[in-house]
Length: 465
Image (cartoon, rainbow, N blue to C red; front, top):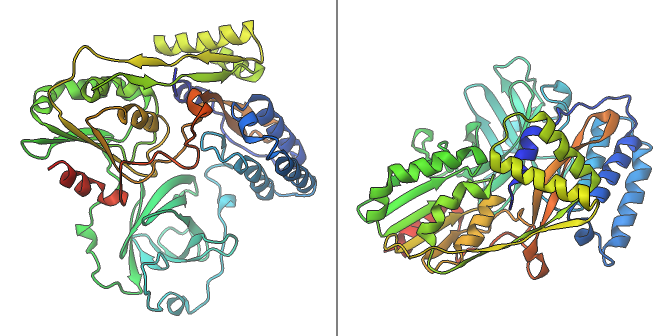
């Protein structure tokens, strides 16, 4: 059940987030605090004797502010600050209402915006004026948060988008990548990733924005730019007679059968190639069951798969009981996992249930592939990180790229309503057994060969020669 229930919980228990102005913020905050303290599998690991005074002060300060704020946005920011204390990518507060112009912020631009962004840039910078078919945007420092940039609308063919509206917020990460809050044409908010390459700003799932000012030396023609965010979910291509490239962008539960079929279809070609490259740079995770078909090819010696501890809170048990009642077509193995959680939670309420780890081994080591390079980036997350943990134990495998996302220590969440606000919080039920001696939270898994993730494929090809 490692990282298994998260897919199910998110798929069936998520509520549509709507916030009501008539709901007191202090009421919502109290519900949030109680839900996390009573149900979060990582609470005792995060609020320790060393951090308790910091936590108590944060709660006191936020409760005071919650009793004073009178806008939805201010309350939501306050709730996000509480969640941020835990630094856990699987502890997720639902978004504010979708498809609402009320979500959009404004930032005033000077009339001579061109001069503001036209200064020579000594080093690559995201600041500048960008153009697409429908928008002209000025990317400038965001006035409300340090080290964040706002893409402010200058012109738009969409009449709903007015000058001064913030189209997206970009927070720099490493090696040219940005975490992005993007607002679509209908004002719906999305969280995604961006990448800056000279005069090209690519936003995953939303396309390319070309920097038109200041002019870039050695600018890349947009029609020649190669995306760093592949659109295909999972695919296999043969680079040459000795190397195969497996691009695996999705380990969601529904992709298990498809990946099994893909490997079977290409079985002859794969087993003729001595070198494999497995690209999980854009894999945000899903279910560990999806990639099990790869393990026989990676295997050289027994693979230790760590177990987990599940917090059998009454809230989690109730959520999974509802899932069994309301979900009519759960796969058998998913249903069995949920039933096991409910059974243990009913028999031993508010205790911990240990799902022991196991050793995976096969009868023989496959002759091909002889070497495997696995490509990683900061967007390699969740069950894709568990895949890295399994793969690192193989003598065939070299991991190439940048650190992974670091959101693997806790997971398998269920959703909790925050009361009259109708916001919800996804709270992990599970903590990893390996936390007794190591942690990847907010650090990620270190590759064997550390390099810029965008260069990982070329680096891997050199290593495999």
